[in-house]
Length: 231
Image 1 (cartoon, rainbow, N blue to C red):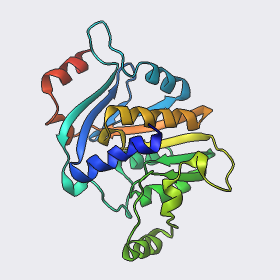
Image 2: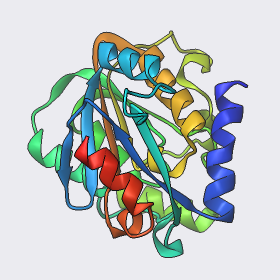
Image 3: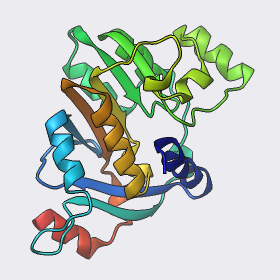
Image 4: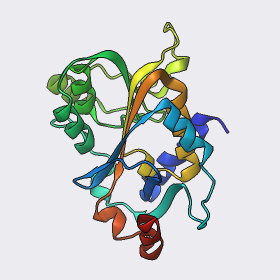
């Protein structure tokens, strides 16, 4: 199954049931703050994660943890963000205000238009990608243009960066992904991680965030979650 077909299930789940998952990469500590966890992965680390995707340790625990945590709150699933970026991206930008002499891909941008706008102030070049980026209403388009002066090209945003016309093949110094992996099944997540790896430059970094709030921890299998936290 190709990547675009795989990620389709993300949107089927999001629209029909809005499933959330507790996602973790054992062996990679990351930083936890304000209801989310964030990692900064190198290309080598992503390769290691992919090699362990379906493997278990001597205690029969997954190296890559993906626990279904029930349904998400409907009011937070697809917010049109014009006033502030997603929480983990906002915190990253606060701590990294200097200009970065590299390019960036916002993978799974959704409706985070403020995040897209703020990234353009940080990196020398920013691309966005979301394979099922929606077609917005005329009212929404006018609102986006008036507030942030951002062009919206839904068809281009849905096209993988490596397949866009009139564009040289790209490698990205930084790839951002926030609150995407925790709304997809594990094997779809694998395709996304593989996409990060394939699009990253040799010295690139993927900044990846997943939810860690009560929306996740109140609904996940508590006994199983405790085993993973203790190991």
